[in-house]
Length: 315
Image (cartoon, rainbow, N blue to C red):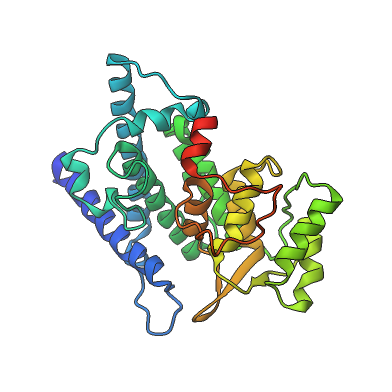
């Protein structure tokens, strides 16, 4: 009969291997279907371990949030304006990562580095746990075609405070399995003249056959084609980040990330590749990996570039 500590160690070990294997594949741009690629560690887990690991991850998320809340009760912080809708995130950012959380890949995934905001705090732990949850859901979807509804219902009942996280993860997996052309559009609040500026700038980075479809997409029409951007993905993504903080686009970062990844790929040195969801998120939400001034495109007077620090000051 295993003790509680032994059970904890088992799940910590599984989580460490899960993140180490899966993140390495992401960083190398490899999937399980790539020629010569090894299957990720997560694919070796039986169903009861997949479900057990999901529960373990959610328990750890609850754990870090309790730590952040307890610290806030002892010394209530003044939450800055820019975190008015993300108070819990701000509380996590105030608590340094303990030695326990430094010891495993489960809490220190490769996609978070020491230059990222929150890397060395409980927020970094929380973000990495969400990443682990994504890998586990993805494997359930891959193995069974869908995530068992009874299991999802049990999760929502056991972890009601994370109902939104649970639902978002489930929705992401469903979207990935949906047919191309899933109805989704953004609304650009541009005058006809400014829309013409934007289309004229962007279309030179697309093949002539894609340009009419690009215009339809930017006008808010759903399209079936996935368009190939002939340039670095960060140049394309940064344009939409600028449109957002200049007030011409009001979709959330999550929605905008999903919309970009659904409708665009890019032509890199190795050929055409899908946009990286993690890279797109980093550019949109943290300005990490933005193009240099020299590489930035669509630099209109009405669409000025603003640094992350200046945006924080004016929030």
